[in-house]
Image 1: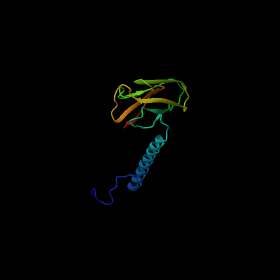
Image 2: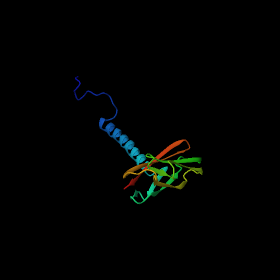
Image 3: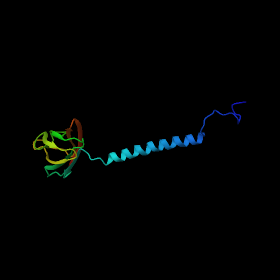
Image 4: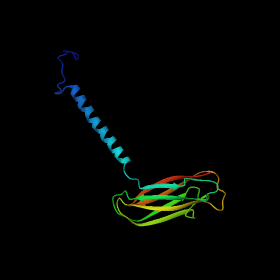
Length: 155
């Protein structure tokens, strides 16, 4: 009675092929569930959306408008939500005629959104070189931090 004899059996009540099929089905279910959650997360609204208009400033243009939409994605009503907008090169690009712009929303219901506008302009006292300038938008809603960046192109 050797290990490789056909009569030798470990005593498992199920066939190995059936067990492998069951394991593969369970793994496939987990993979499909993970993909579903990933795709579902793509359709979730973002807390901050921002658009510059125009996105590019020509040599003779001085300012652009930053349209920011702030959405409460936390599921609870938020109070005193502060939005901070600042260019990384704050000496070259000003927001609302200052280096840092702050606006406050008193009440933002769960799932609701507010639209805000900021004036983005080249510095009147410094020569602004052609290139791209990063503008950061930050907020905190119900203890959760959210950030978004956009780029202003100066030609």
